Length: 586
Image (cartoon, rainbow, N blue to C red; front, side, top):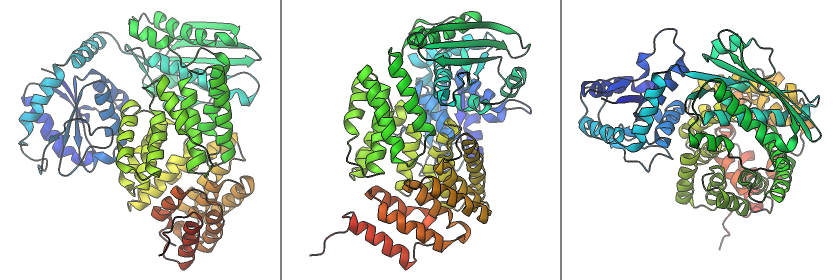
């Protein structure tokens, strides 16, 4: 008998039930979320069942293709060698999963015994008999026989007295989360969840109760010159007692040693056995050069939290990364981030810069990095080599299904192909991975409107406004956040307030054509101000330097209310002419 996890979309409940019954009758122990009982912690129960399963049966359908949850669970099965995919109707597995044989359920409607059930049972037997599944099953048994240890790593507090040092404390926190996630005996709360508590005055026991974890790690970072002081406390989530605590006063060059010590001391305090490969993973860093690491963290902060759409932001990132790779020429992550920023400069701002050398260098150093493949996807797509771009995206998704950059690139590509339904799943996943990502939630407003789902668009607008307001508390001059907030306000019917945010965004970030375009889009919602939209679009088209953005505008659902207006067609045609996109008449 094998332990089976079934992943499916809500619309396919009947089909999931029939498959579960068929597998149960064959002697397997089947878990699907009908097993959740009242009051259970939803995410924790699902994660535990997914971790313990020897095979992950994923039911692909038109509904599940749009589900970020199903894609997450499928990625877990794929990345651990436990995936058993089945497909209903005409559904085709999404990019990143097409290289696996998928059992075709044909026209089966979810009722009665499917003809392909025997094939499914054979596939389960083969999967559960593999070395990977046996190893995973042994680990699951070990976990089941001992209480599960789960930890939330709260964002370490920046005690430097300088808000500009926030990037450093955040980077330390993220690295510790990554290190502890490599320990198979521990369950670690994801970064996007733990960072929602940032800046709050917290009762640790309340945090543990809310997240259903056994322990909470909190700490602080004080960086001054070439010295760093880090304190860390591991706290029992039930009693509130300290399980372990330490303070490190070191030179900045010792930062990696400190991170290693914290992770290993936590493991020792919890009496968890560290496997050799897990210890190696904790000790493996992208660089051993502390100055290069510091530069990379600053660049990363700009990439995630900076003013998206502003070319100066991307130029700063490139400069930081160039300095980092001068200090350590083998710093693959810095090469990859440089390539991502250069791709923005080339494909959004029309700058004469080639991101491919940096992307290729990153992959030469570390072939397992997913993010450089995003740059290759974008380059191939811009050249019209769509099939090659799809294959490259599959590689990126296989290597980094949990990467914010990869999910953003997949969403962008699907959007450009006018596949709004496919784009939604990736934008949703990106928004989950970075809690402050207001741009992905803003794009969800557009995608849901394109699919005719106004209720979901309104919900996305609420999420975008909440995130934009949180960003503006930190930086009231962020034009990109103001433009995103304006879109939300217009969508929610607060037209005058939305126009006020547009005015502020344009005054504060005059050179940002993304702000200009998003502000124009916001004025099309509820027919708020079509004439105002045309005034902004005229400036946008005059300053646009990227043919790719022309195509974006042509398929963007936000333009639908004004697309047939002669003014729009005239502006679009003039921009195409200027960029050499119109065929020359013979």
